[in-house]
Amino acid sequence: MYRILCLLSILFTSVAFAQKAAPQEKRRPNVIFILSDDHAYQAISAYGSKLAQTPSIDRIASQGAILYNNVVTNSICGPSRAVLLTGKHSHINGYKLNEKQFDVNQPVFSEQLQQNGYQTAWIGKMHLGALPNGFDYLNVLPGQGQYYNPDFINSKNEKVKYTGYVTDIITQLSEEWLNKRDTVKPFFLVVGHKATHREWLPAIEDLGYYDNVNFPLPPTFYDEYIGRIAAQKQDMTIDKTMRLKEDLKVHADYDSETGYNPYNGFTPEQKTAFYNYYEKKVSKEFDEKNLSGKALVEWKYQRYMQDYLATARSLDRNIGKLLDYLDQHGLAENTVVIYASDQGFYLGEHGWFDKRFIYEQSLKTPFVIRYPGVIKPGTKVDAVVSNLDWAPTLLNVTGTSVPAQMQGQSFLPLLKGQKTSWKSAAYYHYYEYPMPHNVPPHFGIRTEQYTLARFYGPDNAWELYDIKKDPQNLNNLYGKKGYEKIISTLKAQLKKEIVQAKDNEALKILDGDINE
Figure: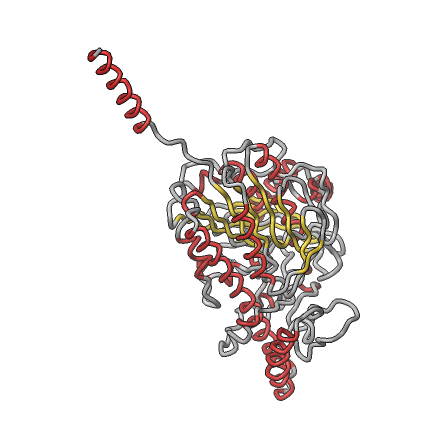
């Protein structure tokens, strides 16, 4: 009997030791994808910006990786989100322009996550004109949404109004969903912010935060657009396009009930705060100065930057709140956190605001990612990555199979610092013309050194930029002596990208050029 007891004791001890020694199966990570609107990388201190400090975005970057050449395939809001959802170019997913209706019958990557046992949610701005499949929970802004006291539409297509500032509300709703989620399952959450979209209404606590800052004019502010036909004909300048009343709130109409009015539905307290700041201070200053010419344009630039960055201040603050929530609830170590914007934006470069062009400031978008234990803190990625690659990467991160029909590829190996073959170019195609900013359609490629673009529609033109020597895209090299071989090589590469992307419209234009 004693011998049997000894053997049993040894057996149980061995089993317990084996269980303890066996490596624990790594839990599938949660993912939070924070996606803002029109937030320029030039306004983020992690990217070297001196315009503003963004400690929360910087926190993600310093604890993980920062991408320096993350570009988009179509620099405009809704289409960029459609690319994220589908992992396909605009001409394939069918959402080329804003204010259309996304085809909800096509596959989206969140459905793959659901099949892999993930809870999925999208809260905040979506801007697709329809509610896509693949989400267990939706609570999104209709269209562009409102900065103050916004309506939200839930999964049942019910409209509910919330009182407060939209950036704060989106964070609150996100935390509420996290509190109520099924804790047995891993989760994927998109936090879609309206900030920093036009008309740049800051939170009340941030009104006037940058009033004492004199922002330096970008070196290209008075760009004359020499050698660039499309740039000459655009309608997106701070000088002529930016509106004093609607954009800069000079003598804003707070009480109009006709047409679009962002102040409709303001509470008395909100309206008083805006009136006291914009009417009694900003508008009064404008009247007293009685500006014209360059002095007026430069005043408009200062006001634009002050409102834009004040709006971004709340965005960064709320990102910090969400990061703190993860720390406080023991979720930080097993949650991948990403911050990105739907595309880049102009902060006075070329005298512009808005986006659309294949030029650097609107083509590149911020992207920082934290993945504890997998991505080494302080990782820097210089390779050209596209938002077409976001969905495959998210699926790869979560151990979910990537559908063959997706056109992007996972850049997780780059984030891990692994040696891997990677594509040498990203393909771009913009469509929305002529409204609202008269930027003609164009397609092209961005490599590590060059941007080659073909404009079509009202004017047919080629443009080539050496972005290492000319990051501001001022000197169009196309047709200049000495660049014949480079142009020939890039055109061949462009055709390869077009064929691979299955962009028949662009291919027809390109073949027409070659056959001339």
